[in-house]
Image 1 (tube, helix red, strand yellow):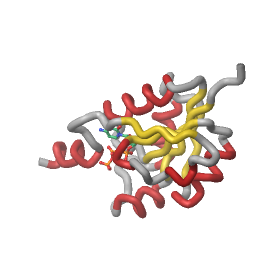
Image 2 (cartoon, protein in one colour; image 1 turned 180 degrees about the vertical axis):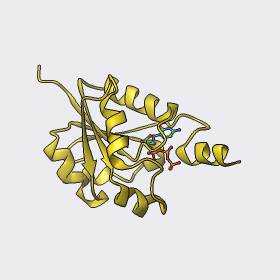
Image 3 (spheres, helix red, strand yellow; image 1 turned 45 degrees about the vertical axis):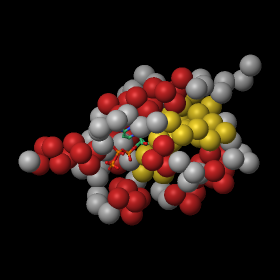
Length: 131
Ligand code: CTP
């Protein structure tokens, strides 16, 4: 049987346990996990601030993980369809903070929203370090 290809996207800045759990659960849904890491410019547009760690470093951390098979840069949210097709992904996985946002791609892949790990986020970690 052909390997089942999974895709997910995110900034993955200040890598934390919520990121790891999301990637582990995504990888368990198939055989090959592609991760689209938001460029610095896209992260800035999404979140209003530049990430702490530049895109090359965020990508290097993701690529070193056992559960991640391929990393590429996501330049814009509008190109999600192109990325899903280019990666030949059958399943798009996102945390449920994105619930409903990618349902328009259901004609080309299955969409799975996974529950977020409670009580942790990049924003919360930065706040904790700051005080
Ligand atoms: N994620 C998760 N559980 C968390 C935090 C993030 O499952 N506690 C998931 C998100 O739903 C997303 C992926 O990890 O699918 C990347 O999320 P990202 O936005 O990069 O991380 P956050 O910690 O949510 O960052 P921020 O605080 O800047 O929003």
